[in-house]
Length: 368
Ligand code: SF4
Ligand code: SF4
Image (cartoon, rainbow, N blue to C red):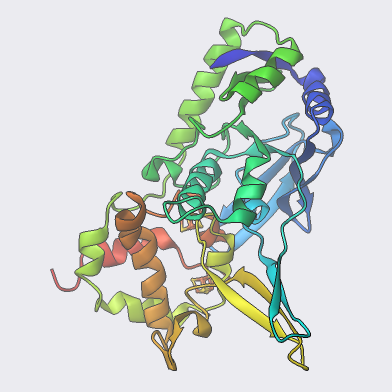
């Protein structure tokens, strides 16, 4: 719901309202040559004028004279690490004098977190993570604790990168749900929409101005331009049948010849949720620490089952990743696991492009 206009010079007021409401604010900043979420206290912390240039195996930040804070597409980090920690202790066990075990669940510290600058693709990915971690089998307590305290300030994408294809997956570039507030950034300021009751409370405190006809027209033009500038796409939204009909396609072997099995693609992917359990017992057998850590289709251990590594080569690991992401996710979640953010393309050290690989397997299929 559109609520009003916040002039650029008053952006600090949004941060002040969130801070007063008890939130620690995270926003985009340039660190080590990439956009990442980090703590912000003042608007000047935001990456004014930063633009990202992305291509297969390529990511660079350019500094421009633009007044905009959000004129970039994304960085390697989505919302995933804020709710599903890359590595965390879940519980500890200690042996008692009578031989019994004392178990202690270790929970993350409670913290209200407002994340500013969230993209539409990342909201779609978070909705998928919610389906996994807050699903029918019950809530994952660590995920649920972090998720409940998130306040999400989305910013509609005005400048998708060359690897973005969220139009093709139906997930962007405009944020349509899953946010508390959404901002449309124009040179002069921000059109503010609220998407939840608590978002409406924050918007009301801002005492926003009326949105002018010029601002509304500029926002519509910007949204159209963001959509039309995307040139990558997947060959369809439901590729289950064609992918599973082509499990012996020669392209799997060809891509395996380039793939380093490094797992970068799964680390940056905002929807990948696989993890490994890590037990660290004390040498005397008196205690043990149970942790979980992100895992990947590309690691050898990920398919180790009862003395056997089921996917022993890169060909079958890459095939597992792509056929799960674009195929069997439909059976689990009713849609594909790709939200078109393009991160796996930019951050692949050898520039493997999921849209090219999917097209190669699905169109001109070997056994058609
Ligand atoms: S598969 Fe690639 S493009 Fe799709 S959501 Fe994951 S990182 Fe983004
Ligand atoms: S596709 Fe690229 S990023 Fe993914 S494991 Fe292979 S080399 Fe690494």
